[in-house]
Image 1 (cartoon, one colour):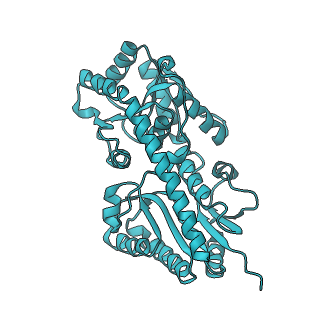
Image 2 (cartoon, rainbow, N blue to C red):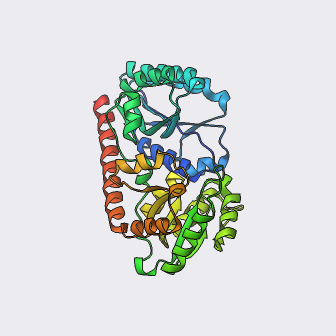
Image 3 (cartoon, rainbow, N blue to C red):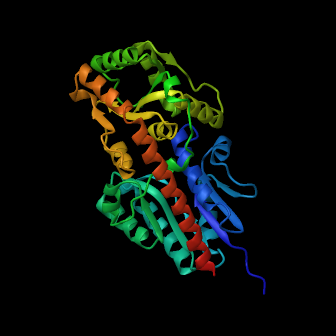
Length: 358
């Protein structure tokens, strides 16, 4: 008797205007590709450009719009034996409004496990946890063969134990421009947070001048474009807009910019991840930074990556930037180890899927 085709289902929603989100969703799709005869990817309300950003293999069955959720659930329920279910990587909100969603995800997990399948929750971080949503999420995570956390605090909240590098570190290490020839100090800050004060501007401008670096502001999340322009004006730097560029072309251009940078200052986690992959020194130097970046980079052994600009003088901020540049070799070594860990993890997942079907 001919075996029924196998099926892998991947959730990969996200905004096309956020290159970091595309990066980590693409990583999860790459883990799933080739694990079954049929690949099904749910993208929600995402535009056509998002499909290109995900790098979906030819023949992928794409489910779009919230109207296709019922179809998604039906494909899980009717999947042949040993299906694979891959949830989204990234930040997971567990506030009260997500209790129903977590119940649905728990039901999906149970269905796949009852069919002898494999459930993969790629590296994730928890945000805004409430007791009810976190409790449901914790049960679903324990029922998954792979429940991975990109920071220790999230693992504790979910009752998990496996802390691994953020999947963004698997996006490819680049040699970049030789260190002696790098001439850029790049800044990319969230547009939704307050503009740093005069002391911060003074410190960044003075440090760039002392190191012979050009200041360049870039946009990795489209909503930050106005802030990037404001920063360039305030710092006397060069502003590089997103404009009408295709997101994939924009991502490629950004990575080239990070290749030329010695220091990248940002409060966007995946700006700093891509910067580190290009060999630049990453630094979160902003007023009242969150714990997110600190926690994720601590997982790969990089500590003291964050500094609270509100508590430092201009001279202290300059010293902090100088110390970070001196750590470039350490950054390169830690990023290489993280990439190797993620490659081994992908191999482990694929092996578990093969064994489940043996």
